Amino acid sequence: QNDDDQVDYVDRLREACLNSYTGILQGFKASPDVAATRNTVEIFVKPIIQLILRVASMEPVAPSESLMATTAGIIGDLVGLYEGDIVRFFAADN
Image (cartoon, rainbow, N blue to C red; front, side):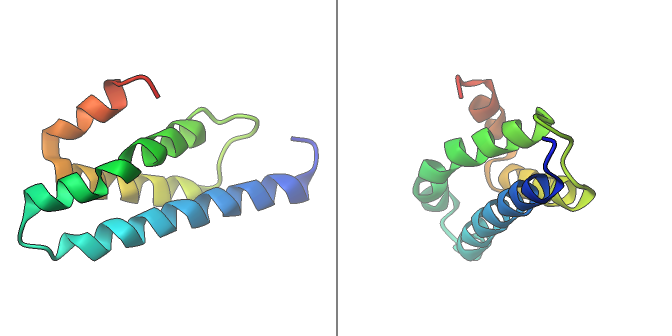
């Protein structure tokens, strides 16, 4: 946490991971079969949630505004896909 370059690198790495997950979710968004899409992307949801929780923990330092915006965006994508059912993923042991 004392190395500004390392902190910036980790922040950008987390943002890149979330952007990749966003791409996966967006790729399936056009599918007319929502149930099949949910089943297909479910394997990615737990790692996405774990990363979201890691970002939200603000450890070892607070995330950048850009990372927070990306995190909010993917939460919106997950809610759009799973609607209220997304809560079960956050409630599960991660």
